[in-house]
Length: 176
Image 1: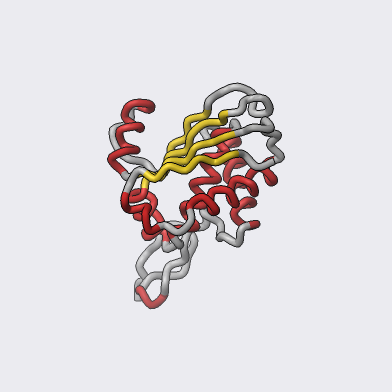
Image 2: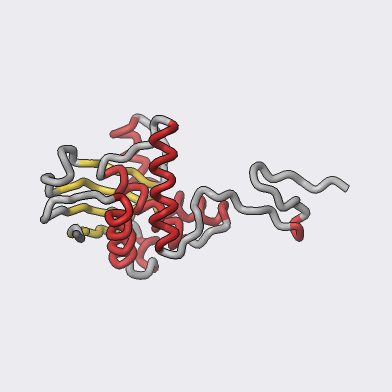
């Protein structure tokens, strides 16, 4: 089952992002497959690619948080098997780009992760409780692995050339 995906680009920065519709469809179809979600026959979602100002306004209005974030999801509510409109996913360019750079991962891979994450929220997943977060993250890892994308929760290893020890976890300087 492939839902209808409406794409809206609300920020110029996204104009150079190659084929967001195909990426969204690929990620969402894989997420449906991996999650086993049963959607309404005419299921529809919207994805808005915006800037930090746009998402900060939404974050302030709907969550009471006065700052930008990478992704917001707005589930429409109701059982997904009979609800045709699943909801909206909103992704901010600047925050997403900064996070990708800081983590040393390709921007497109990070966007794919945020699409999967946002879609899981639309179909009822959450990460407020530790067990729910673990289940959601495991599903995200599985979806992305099937798409050839590295584990988004794997911390990058430090580079010896940068004078840092190759360790997992907080990076520390090598002491000689």
